[in-house]
Length: 462
Image (cartoon, rainbow, N blue to C red; front, side, top):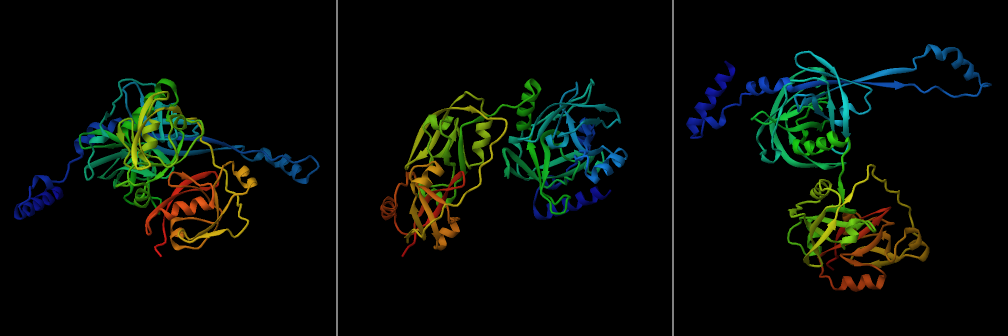
């Protein structure tokens, strides 16, 4: 009755204003839920946490205490958690999030008809937060998979899951954005929605209005622990690529080319002669890696990879990772004011990433003031060059100019290059700066610790 009254009101307003009343009619989710709801499952996990027993020498008084009372203390306890998932094949394959089943000793899947099954993990991929489970059953209801590329911002979507353990809860909203990059998630172009997602929804499906799964609900942004209208789903095509590999081999193989990249800003684009801040800026190249062997250099800007445009830096890791190792790929890049094409043989990404070492300060003296940059720099000593394992480079001794501070330069940074010109001496730096018009941005390749990135510094106009 209420819905009819609301739609009647919208109809009247639409007619008065001259708009199409049909376009403003509220959506009806009942058919979608009735058809697809049975394929959504509740996932409960149990993890056995074993208490480590203290190790004291026999003469220690505490040893006698634990010898007498430790047998009465629990040696292990259970930790339980809840999540959601959905059946993708009638013979019992189920998609969910990796974090839902990570470290679980026991996994139980409960269907909407109250049947329960023990599940085994076929494979887990933490980089995309996708997991594939299997239960021994047949003739199960299954979902239909859609195409996330066809999703439009503003389109209605529906989530079904078990928030806080409340099975088969339905929430709805719209697509807020597509292709979102989140910190530490380089391989997933997330779908952002305002659908109410809470703990327990993780691993559940996100449906379009055709009743097709377009994503796996994975993360929320929250300050309270509950929904704040910012939820993120893994596109189902990304998840499907992962689960197909998990089903066949139990692991996921990804490509790599051995570069460090950073976002291209307008200031950096100007300094490199690009009209638009598109592409992925290469800040460093792994020695003898696939990119190095292909001739890719630091300061290159990758504009296309395998024929696909790299609109921002976040696009490149996903494109490379989705490429089969040993594939030959044409890379279009921008170098020294012009475009260039190179062929790269894609390598294989290792299972575990490597952690960078912390920076060590090497500042010794005042250095020479470079007025146009607003910094004092000095040439590296032989010992400093050997310690850093680099040839050339200038050490930042002091940061005075506001533009240098805004850019992020710090005392102890090492300037490796200006644009694509490696820096060898103070005289060379001053010579290069004389050729740059006042008020322009220059791109400085800055090493801090074991990583390097470009910073755009605006030259002093005085």
